[in-house]
Image (cartoon, rainbow, N blue to C red; front, side):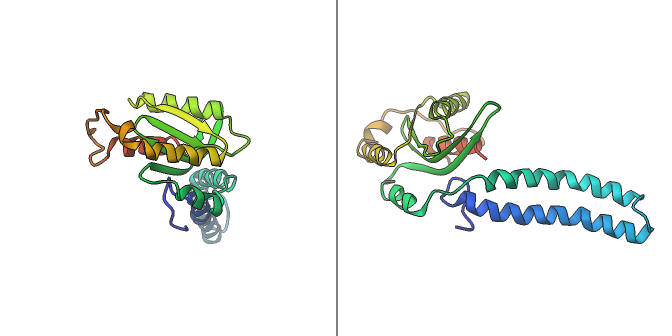
Length: 201
């Protein structure tokens, strides 16, 4: 879990640890420069202080990123195992946090089959309508004409997963897809997943 990649279960948890370490290092560098400069020159009024202040900019940005991940929680293991058992041959992504100027949306799980994209949203603060509309808009901007739906009940979601698996051949038949330049090796569903993850933290 500590090495979970984007779109995998445990991603938020692993990123909290990773971002914490990165943030600590980024703050340690300018602080070390500041202290070293003050000791060497005998005063804080030196060029090393300016370098240290500039170095605080990426450290502060990393801190903001860390805070964003500290506010997110990975899906409970029991729920993840429930979803995992229904994956079948669906294209799946976990733990997506989409941000926009207006609202943010936490999607626990996203499944893709043909033109069907269904998300599980259990976070009470997330507006499912916004999550649906925002993801639809972003995917269509990338040339993916799909039907997006969001559910908030894990039992209904796993039922939908089972239905998609049962109808997978039918849902995928007749869909034309030409491999895109720069995305060689990506199938259509893999590309939809890739784009959806790009919209996420």
